[in-house]
Length: 239
Image 1: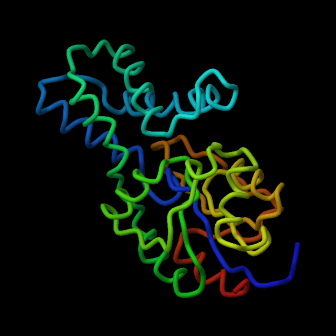
Image 2: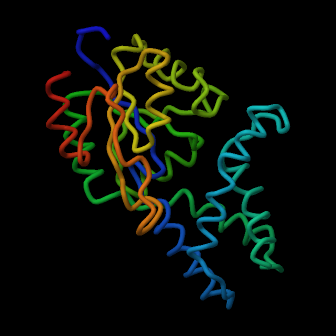
Image 3: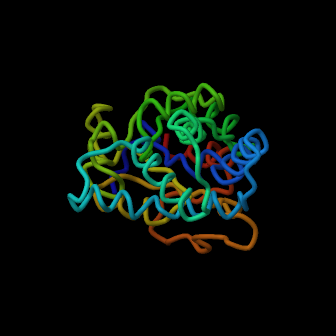
């Protein structure tokens, strides 16, 4: 690991920056109330998200051509509607539900923490979400990104090495100058393999009560913080 200063932080978004689960549940509940559709929306959100990795694997393994996350979410939605026996939605209604992923609430510390970090570093999303989704989400949630990076620009989903290295290249930096920030340890370990630094932020409520992922941080991580405000304080040592 180089001793040179870090210059940029890039962020996993779903679960790390925004509370996807409660945001999707709430929007589905509101949609169901308007359309007189009754369902277990908590389970619906979990089932929809549960198709995330399998569908990205279809792209990775060539079963699907490159398809951005909006496109995959639409396919995943149809499977989830079928699972929950929800029929009769028009294409426009399905597009509306798919767009729920563009409007996700940030965790309470995310925006204030990002502003503090922005004073020290370039900050950008490093998400599997596509550029339009990340841009709309930033407007909705008040996320002060300096630019939008992520899988769509690399045409590779995380944890493919190309996803991280394309972000580094587009920033005009070396891997050790960039800190991958995430609540998911596998994301950080993959970024470390190609030379990025790592910052771990646990989000115990990402998947709801009693389903805490990643309980013990890997000792290889460069920074472990309780939230984004704490991260801003700890990152001063690497600035």
